[in-house]
Length: 447
Image 1: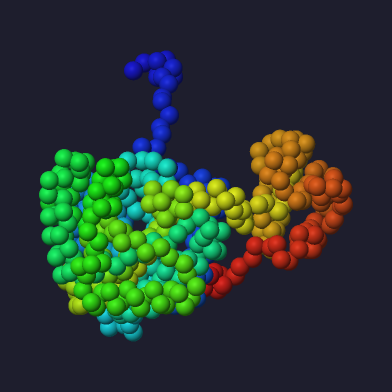
Image 2 (image 1 turned 180 degrees about the vertical axis):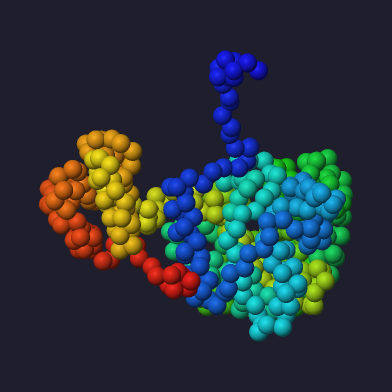
């Protein structure tokens, strides 16, 4: 291509692929706040953080989630590496945690093992409100003990986080028991018999579910399918005595700690590994369409994946949906991104003085920016206004010669001249110790 044509060529700007989105600075404030709340509550309860790889062997998810689930059959991002091995971007967190539990011998640790995560996940799903193809979840996993009191504590932990985030009033806790796998097999046969002759009223997805996993028929949002599901035999009538007693004990614990719940005998989870307790937090107005999270007990998963018999219970919540609800409730999150000081300068010599001053201000805990471009002092002060800084430091030719700087209160419009060696101490006093952003390397290691 000739150079002249090359200059005239105009490129189309790139955009994100469908179903994914940038997390811009304002939303990162929500992410940071949610992460701090989750970390604080997790530490209080003795959980330790785990991170599993973004991708795993595909078979891990097929075996754990189930071939008949929508996730495995339609929604996974699966690819082959250069050696032809099938890998999948993780669509949920529990399978990877269970794999890590086995691989790293966590069964030898004091039981139960309490773990939490805060990570991105991936599903090829139809993008819509609160549903993305790359999405963030936080979750809690308790492995190594079977006790309805543990289920109650996981629910209580989730509920406490919702309270901290200011959204607990928007959701109802939906609760059910789906019993043991053996009891479910008997019930699924009853369901199949119930749907005989009704297949024409089912959507295409549910026609397939009827032969692969009839329980998933309760998950469908199509109106005709929902009507049939409401009239279907009740699972509780076919469950084993042990599961029913376990569920009744869980209800007693929830009553004791004052957590309200709705017993929903049609509630099932979209993953095959659940047993006994299942629960979700549903929007009081939109129901399951705007659920923010859910979980339950998965006593057989670790053994299914090659480990020892290890009872477990967990919960996971969608961060994007939580943020959307926080915004709906006009929840204000604390921000640490505000700038305390803007250093404005005029001339090369002044800029040379500014650079070490900016570093000293930052080391003192004052969030500082400056020495930008070549604009006039007035242009720089207008920029300082846009950043909504509390104070500006002005250094020009006169100040360089006299070894001083001007500190300007941007709100009141008053200013004072200070020896340059005293600028840091003066601004620390003006801003206040409580507002400083300080850390030592030692503190950072344990933050």
